[in-house]
Structures are given as C-alpha cells and as structure tokens.
Length: 229
Image (cartoon, rainbow, N blue to C red):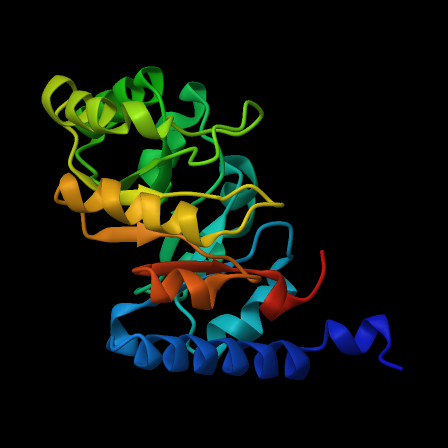
C-alpha cells in the first residue's frame, strides 16, 4: 500500500510528470501532430511551493493557477528564479483583480464577459503589458459555470476585438463532468476555426489525450502529476 507521504514525494511526482509528457507526445503522434505543438499546462493550484519546485527543476515551465491571490502569494519567488516561466490564469477572473492579473500572468484563459474584457483592456492600456488572452466558452451551457455560451461566442469575440481592442489568441473550455467530452472539444475547435484562432486550451487529467486528438494546443493537467488535492 502506498502511503500519503509516498504519493506526494518528489520522485513519484516526477515519475507522473514524465508519464504525462509521454502520453501527450504519443497522443499527438497518433493524431498525426507534432508533439511540440501541444503544451502541458501543469495545474499547480492549491499545491505549495515545496511540491512545485521539483517539477519546475525538472524543466516544466508552464503552470496554471485558479486564483489571482494564491498566485501572487506563491509565484513571485519562483518566477524570479525561472526567467522563461509562463503562468496561466485558468480560474474565473473578477474585475477587481484585473490589474493584478494583467500585471502578473502571461496568459489569461478566462475572458468571459464584457465587464472583464473592458477591465483587461483598461489595464493593458494603463501598464502596457499584453498577456495572451483566451475566451472561455461554456460549451455545456451550465448555469453554475463561467464562460460565454457557444451561440454568442462569435459576437463576444468581435466585441473583444472591435470594442475593446483586445487581441484574442484562442479559446478555453471545461466540459460538463458527466458528459462525453469529445463533442465539447469538437465544438470549441469549430468556433476557433471560424474566428481564425489557433490556441485551444482543452483537456484535463482525465481526457487530455482525447482533447489532443481534437486539436488541443494546451492541456491543463494537475492531479495526474501532483496526485489528489
């Protein structure tokens, strides 16, 4: 039986990281894609610096955090020691956190309403920093989940571009837990294609290989690397 201490040990975490990297590469090759075209976003939300450091030292430089405040508490010292680190905000953004998010994150994946688009645009104008931006699409139309509805995604993208002057790099989605994920990934891909977007953040620990088959350029994997939260 594996103890809790063992499941959180750096060696086990690094073994999992290596396995996930290999699974990503294999899924990309199976789909006729270059593995280099799929980026692993290692989801480090809720995990302490002590558990992130071994992964960082193993060469993983792209990480995802859910909360602006948690990232601000955890990542400044880590960023100082890793010049090529890329930090993604993958959780909902409140407008009063837009200033910190634009200043600190390299990618904001959760642009999902006019108020947020306006706040981000104002902060970009103010500080001159341009994180890459993704629009989150609520592909399952779940009332409790953030994201624009699929039927208004095109209009929202146009508003982001024309009204707020934002450069949108791509789309992100989180399919409903109990749904087959592939229709949601395919839908996101179609919305991206007709809007000229190439960055697709979709797929998590349980379904990232399927997401890669359906065009994901970024997969967000946490528990398959760090273990259960």
